[in-house]
Length: 256
Length: 311
Picture 1 (spheres, each protein chain N blue to C red):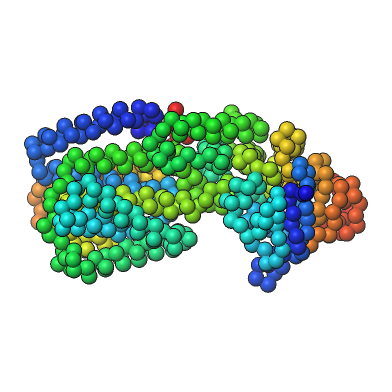
Picture 2 (spheres, each protein chain N blue to C red):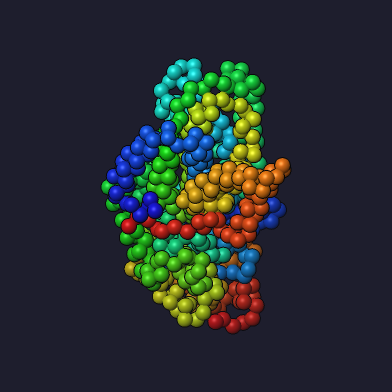
């Protein structure tokens, strides 16, 4: 059975149909790319999966459970985490605090423990912090853990978002344009991080990306979206040659 | 300061209680005018710190703090006056009543953001005041006289300690981080599994509980209550304290609550010194507020920055 299933999802904003009859499924440990021109509805698809938009029709199933229209925090607890296209860090908090907010998801000591500072509270805090540091080590930010996150360079902020997303220990992670604004060196590092997520952490990854170098390098399967509809689906090599993709997405007849 | 104590919190608390008790024994030697300012400072610390949890930590702009204070004040006074309920129990009852009203108000209004929430909580505060105006059993528009005088230095500063300690412990806990994450970015907080509605309501209830307790202390110090004491100007007064101290800084709120209680009193001497007939006290007070905000927009202590957790 597939991990994530989207069945005929349609999303409308007023009269505009942002996504129509989007049907798609993902197997466990797959790495799928979602590409398409600006405004094609890629982020809307992510927002439907994570509960920020409620589709007007269709059904989202995750690990056999119907999650259509459930609130984002519920979906996060089931094991879907995400990053945001326009970085959304907790900017006045430190790097470590940012990740701890994510890594504490499965272990809230009760208010009583927190207010009375029991030894159980201290044990939980230690676990939360260790989990957060582990996530920071994956993206290589553990040295910067006491920095205020808004002071980080742009590329590190993107990495911090990824650290935060994996700290919730998800099954599926949705990366919304992780390479946006990164320089070539950072992009290479990012490709390395994404490989670690899949190979070492065993995550299923769904990726929106405009940087074709990233998409063609790491994705096993690519879905192309235009005007809210899937216009092509296949391996990177298949996608590269499909004329409808070239026409709708790239404009010219070259890739890369 | 308090947060660095870690596991030594309880011994520290006991030492503080003994110390406060000791000062209380000496309080009859303190000039009653000074003692009154000291007690009002304490009550203002409680009010400011509790509002700071709502406005500064959770980022929910509430203007209804005077309303919550009124609920606690009237209920605890009602209990001690009519039923001779012991003072601590009356205080807790006042706080709980205020907290319950906090839940009732919070659930519908916390969907609103920023200015809209401010207006809604302002309206709530006014409703409470108007209801009290028309409640004959607590005196209505005539006021509520004859409340027993139970509040003294000991009770006020015992509760100041508890408010500071509980706010610090809340701030440096998973719940506290969840509350901060709502202030920083509600959408991202949701994606990290933070149930934003639940934590917003918790912060709101936590703040209104302590406001209710502060109201109880206030009632049993003044021995007289009148609904007109709880207008929205009272809420603004508390708001000024937390903005001046630095939004999100618990220590800052406490310091500026004391500062702003002493300042208007200290300025009374200006009239004496310059031997004028007009009293420029409130003008100078306002000017000082403007100046502080211009020179230190982040507040006296500076908000939004803390250490990660206890070491």
